[in-house]
View: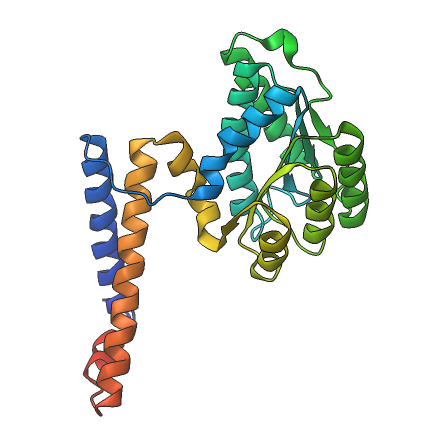
Length: 259
């Protein structure tokens, strides 16, 4: 017997599961959902192209946090998804790439992603162990080392997508000082204004979580993204409907959701 107050949760989960399955199957059949243009992700090719023309490196970092952290993992994995795309492009064009990471777990994943990209491009000889650099798990030690890397390498592009806290403005200002095209993004809301004012392009909030679907255009991921959007719209409509019902003195929806 279902526990009082959880029936609505079970029903909602079942409805959303059906929506997800429907959207994924629809995408796999070739009817890909529309994903609005995200200028920051479109600019990645431009940034890599500029670095290639100038013969300067592309610098990317997902931040100092670990991929195993409950709060940080989704943003770090989003940064790794971008790294997969960037490393494929830099390998294709033989553009120097420097990746700064601050956690051992993140380093292992990032290193394997970059190495696999160069291997797929048939340019494993251009991959070097110094491509992905483990700096420090300590926030300010990582920041200092990353600032030094950006400055010494005189990077032409600086891509910062992942988990960032107080170091965000320092990294962004350093990239700006060397004249790099900067693309940044995080779901840590207090840091977004710093990226917005100091970078050329900024991903805001949940745009960070859409990077895999946007860049790879893989049907399953695109269908899943569409399913999430439908679920969010349904939740928003329920909130609006509940507010209207309560405004006019009816607790019908409240009682229904409490079952």
